[in-house]
Length: 393
Image (cartoon, rainbow, N blue to C red):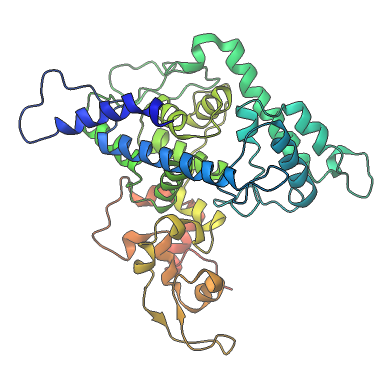
């Protein structure tokens, strides 16, 4: 991998060398994907570190070929089948797959094996269908039904890719419902959406903030950090990342798809680009999906464990000091941000809402969009009326 990365590293270094205060040299390379060289360097460095840690883990793999660590995966059909059987037997029935953090066996992690052809979707469906509830043959009663449903959705994107030719990669996509044109350059509502031009300095700046994980939106920034450092993040946070880039920043969805293609260990052309079409609003689907990232975080990361895992500085905002004991079941004092007592802290002190809306706790916190756009109507109303995002116990 280091040899493969060498030309890219050289390109990045040439960009950095020409990033001084003086005029850039005439032969300075153009940015890749419009990304600043330090962003690309961070991605490359993380990929090399991940590759090295995976190699070390694989040297110490278990007798069945599986890895000793959840963050490192060993390839091949034998290991893939073992992983599939183990997940279906032990975890699929209890997995909460829509969480922001799925590291605790709440995701099958089969996408890696599918992407590299170690497993076929048919084999996954066959294995998943063996697990029935109370020996009931009705597929609706199968605790692995969600896993089979995901294979169906993956097939939809793959076949869409096969049949749509170059439209699969077109800015306008193949929408059933056209977005209204937001530019004054045309009055035709049937025209495709006009994404912000990459020739605009503000667009370039916002694009890089999104790719750096410095949008000021905790869920998005945590997702970017995880993606760059591990090559993976949950489907929930991928959807939120796409929504912010396309719906809030109006940046061409294809930039996000290419960024994912660069970073994802489990990258699959059909699944990745198909999902980006889907959530940017230019896919073969009439529904508009605009995720409100603060409300999403409250719902799918209610104790802030995910965002503080990747953005530990949020603990400072949440009162990195101690909270006085208000409950006889809690001995002494509790540190805000202590993940073992997150729910107790939420009842004792609302300050951990800084995990979700840090701009209300730090006036200098810089957010890339108007924070008011990141709440659902109900959550914004509750916040205005009670000063809290949480419903009273």
